[in-house]
Amino acid sequence: MADFSFDIESTYDKAEMNNVEQLVTREIANRYDFKGTPAAIEWLEDKKGFKVIGSNEWQVNTLIDMIGRQLAKRDMTSKVLDTSGKITEANLRAWRDVPFRHGLTQDDAKKITKLLKESHPKVRTQIQGDSVRASSASKNELQAAMTTLRAADFDFPLTFTNYR
Image 1 (cartoon, rainbow, N blue to C red):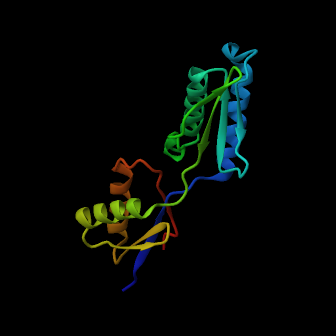
Image 2: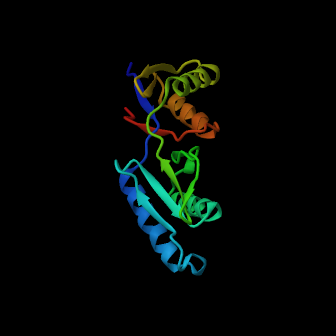
């Protein structure tokens, strides 16, 4: 009897994030309320997040909303954005570093494991670093587990990889 499995990870697509950055930059250039302001979106040094720049806090939050809309248009979740950082203001400019969430913490992995054990007892889970491997003898059971995880409202993005 074959054993089927898949990995649950918290990642983002780097190429899609590059497309989002270009689309938001284009939208900033076309908006009349951003003309003559320092509104911009830049990559962080390590390309693992955005630096959102505006003239005030309202403009920075509007830019973050624009990023979220572009992510939604590209079938990605805005949960990948870590907006917990503070807005810094100086010299008539405001900015916020918005890093991307990547990898599951141990607590997040335990939440996933607990949910799967409660709702699908036939699915075995194993925490492997920053991912969780779910395995079962039934493909249908794994697909039901995926549906359960998609329906759960976690505060981090989920991706399913290595479906075997």
